[in-house]
Image 1 (tube, rainbow, N blue to C red):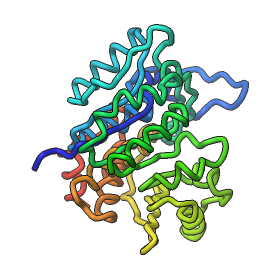
Image 2: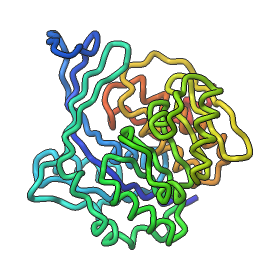
Image 3: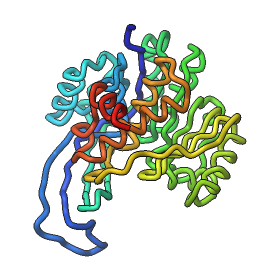
Length: 309
């Protein structure tokens, strides 16, 4: 069976990671951390996740003309990602993220968007040839909202389902016109609260939040709940789907891994619950490893993990 074509639009960053016993408090300096760098950025993570999960992936993004951009591009090519629609920006550096990771696996992240913030609707329109034939468009919110909206409109024009991961949490509610274009919205608990005003703490509140989002025009809502799994509401059924318990090392790219794997599973024709099970398995593997893209599992690893469940 040919690999399904997945289109991803979004950010690419170089992650600079310090692993510590705990995340520093404001004004506090902690010594003794271990430093590493890794390829990251939500868009890039999702593109890599989709490619390793079995997708034929094309990525629309903007990188600086610098060392970090060169390294990112080499990584995409190693994962056999179509890089024809990745632009190089001579005026602005590539995006960078500074990440603290605690021994518990929790993290704290600050991002300098760099070239990501200069990805424009015109850039999207220039990449229109990538839309026809794609089985899904996956996006996040680390690039400008007008750019995300322009891509959603093009996807709608070409009949491409849209998976929008509203991360990082927007400062305000998303435009209804954008939400009405979204096939699947995948917020985590914090993002769901930002979008609805409903604090998500359990299955009942997840049900309320997902219903509120669907009332705004979203087709299906999947609220990712970390180690509690995911809550899905497609208008016919609403249910929580658990994940296996594992020792968490770093949760940095778990949500991105989930979204990339979800897109591939749905594009392959799996039903929604089975696609979420596949995506949950991929995300669960990722939290047992340090780093964003280094933590993303391959298709073989996901299938081996699922076989043991």
